[in-house]
Length: 297
Image 1 (cartoon, rainbow, N blue to C red):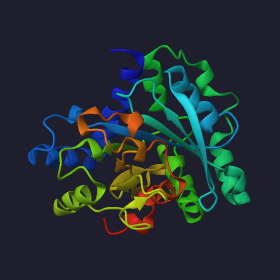
Image 2: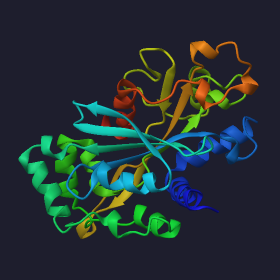
Image 3: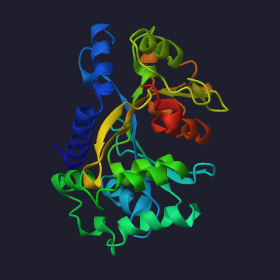
Image 4: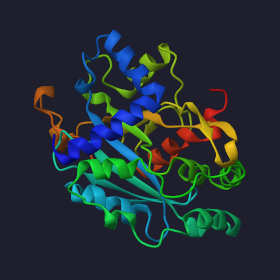
């Protein structure tokens, strides 16, 4: 197993164990005969959240993926949520794209900035610089390690009142936020977002309704949906516990570009489909972990 495979395997293994919806989706897809084994699924992209402060955030985290052969692509800005993001193209089509976002901590209130600063003040250098970026086990361990102390429930709630993204990151750190099933590569009858959403809801999954269950790019070529994050029991500093939003599963349909409309389905590759991301879509997908979506789950 090469280094990138090792890192991705570690991410997906822990994510699947922690997010029940992942195995549930795989199970119903297998029962329905859509797939035979999980590896039949194309993973469109995986996503991470981070804090945009010195020594952390995108500038730090991207070093891991750039070292693994990824190429930095387009920038996205989310003014309402106070976020920056980039996506990264993989070194080969069999690998997922990467979507990295970070909180614009400088845009938060002084109270929120102080809480984040209190937890991260001992980070005086970029922790990625100390890693052997050729060692998959080292990078896998780093992506599942704690870079700052466990927060108190009070601090978590204070952050959540201003930025639910901030609260999610202060508790979850770099934990994988979601992976994404490429529905356009599934068998006919399940290979559109509309059809796959219907399939999911028939099996009892709750979908993110922010901006509509189907999020569509202005060009109509990128359609996305997502489950609502399930709740996990979180243990906070001091022993307090609370059910909070964990991670979720996303679904993407990348339509064939107009210039390739005449190609047969068997000859289509990623280069023939809509590439990149769409800020308007992503803005609503972020809300899969927000209380407006998760309350009642």
